[in-house]
Length: 277
Image (cartoon, rainbow, N blue to C red; front, side, top):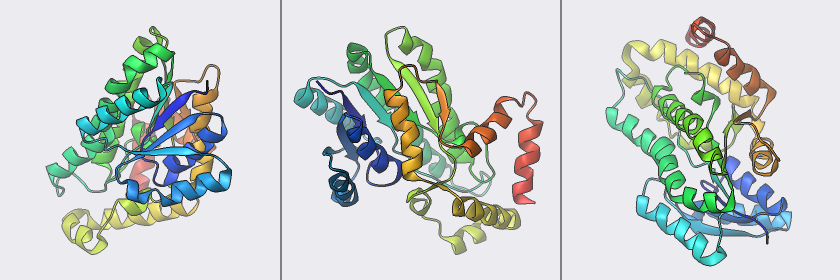
């Protein structure tokens, strides 16, 4: 019988593309999103690809919603062979001028949501000797200016998964983190920046933030597509022995490689200071 994968955050971007490509690869796909009224683009893409996906509601910030979704998969399919933690939310700001509540909100979606789903899914992944794939970010390896909250959450996810991987492997579960760089998707739009308000809020940091935003705009102008990034996620689902850490582009590999070879942190600091100068 075909394996079953549950994917979060599938209304757009990498999640949508992963759902379609996983179905093409032979998975029975349970594609989840917080608001199922936004399933139109996914269903259209699946129809165009000649595959079916099972769209269900899952809010990763709601523990009851997470448990209900996982229980529903087991009740209807009898198994769970893979999970893709993809749902996430961006945020820009800097700690002195930002609200601590924003840090908590970003952690809820990007970190604790992953914890909730991983916890609920692991008993079933153990039973199936399954796969746990989590979409993090190059921002989970390299801290980036004005992304303190977002990078903190993604660093936390990477630390959790790196720690979990050998423990899960001893029980037959493969853990992989996938690190995209800039991806042309709705992710940036969903950050919902009020540029006028945030520049006023930045105070003494406004000049540096303006430079950062200019650099970020340039990087996303040359971003890879969601389909390209999703191929790496699906490879992590289907490869015989996937690596723990994989990147979705050569740029992402080079960028994260600087950090992973940067024992004293000086190379990364030299790089990122240039983004705001």
